[in-house]
Image (cartoon, rainbow, N blue to C red; front, side):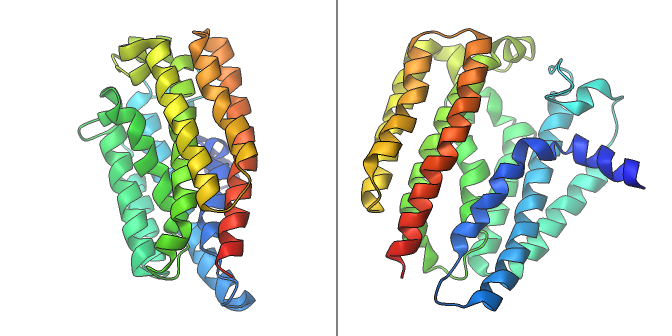
Length: 272
């Protein structure tokens, strides 16, 4: 039993998305009290985990032929298998938990599930330059609202969503630079492969501007956002190797946690 659970956790690539479980905490309401927050956010975390497991398991199954590294995609080392039932169960679980939180949470979870399907399967929009890159926003940003108690949280969380979206696109551009060879082997035409390092650097710079704007709108200091926002455009402008882009992506992810925490704290403080 233990080995079976561990195998499914590996296939769903939990280690690659566990940091996104922080996102529903954006729905914390300081006026609601501890008990109300704990109950709602616990259900939101279950919904978020189910959405992420669905998206990553689906992506792993559809990319297994092009991914060579089992550390990145555990299914690359496995025989093909039908994952329809576990994927359906994950989607159902996410929907039920999100529905128990709020109508906004249900819409957010549904948007993320639908985006994940369109990105990896269905029309497989990850293969469309610019569109596939931008879809990282619709894949992950809705999870900020899975813990929201009502539609009133939309305005409160808007600056955080803007900043998070900018960081997502920047990190995705670095990801595309790091995985350019694998994407070429799988006939996936990403933004980086289609337009090159300099256009990708320009897009990352535009995202840096959006990140600083989000900090200003949330009344947070713009300097951490400016520092983090500079990592991706500077790296991409140097036309990095896959190894350099991979290291830059990991550094950017760590710095994004700091910038995101600053935006989160500012949004929570403004809501008091």
